[in-house]
Image 1: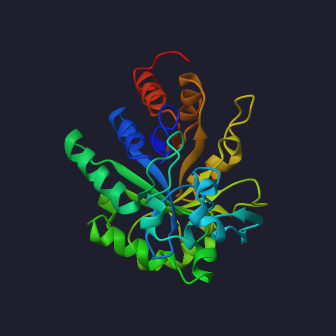
Image 2: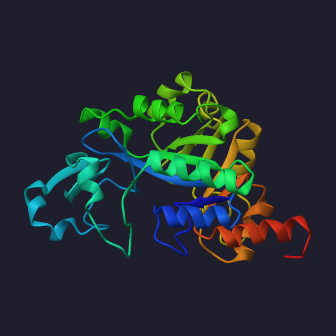
Amino acid sequence: MIGHRGAPGHLPEHSLDSYRLAIRMGADAVETDVVMSSDGVLVVRHENELSRTTDVAQRPEFADRRTIRQVGRTLRRGWFTEDFTFAELRTLGAPTVIDPIISLDELLLLVAEESARAGRRVGLHVEVKHPAYFAARGLPVDATLLQTLRDHGVDHPGSRVWIQSFDAAFLRRISPLTALPLVQLVDETWRRIECHAVAAYADAIGPRRTMVLSGTGAVKPLLAEAHRAGLRVFVWTMRGSVEAHRAMLAAGVDGVFTDYADRAVEALARSVVGEPA
């Protein structure tokens, strides 16, 4: 049971309180996204464009940093994390969405603290966003991420840290550099997912939930194909009822990313005791 960006069904995503709540609800792990600041800090947030989730557009001192960038397949206009130091990012506010902006270092400290409090090792899935884009701007994520994980003593498989990305080239590049398990995130833009090929560099796939379970409840072939290739399957993102979470677990996935860690934990508990669906 993986708390997707914390527990955003209850509290603002990517906030320390949200991550803390997901863990205290019983999540086995939490998931985060990281982008880069101009001074090379790994910043916890879903996208590098800032105007949707902060008050940067109302800050006259930053007006001249508004620009247009090609990020992945999308042309975007706005303000971007890579044009701000982490100290500047910390001054941005938007309490209804994310306040304050936090770093991966801070999240790792929280996970360690909550693991000690709970008496269990809480896992962490780190999704690297747009690694090729940041590398092209002189901000390679690879070395910074691996060094950060080493600094916190979680660069070994027993730490329950997973590195994930949609960028297959990035995962192939870091595969020989780390003993940590890797997750290849996939969506419908992949015309064909060659699970045995993915298994050469990754340990799991992370498909959209509709790629595993149809609207009628039929289990799609991808799940069995991945398992035959030795890959675990973590689906994203569950937001429905306890029953919806139970149906996904019953399909045979290895984990779910969920906005409602409490529903996922209840679904697992009810499944274990064998309560009828």
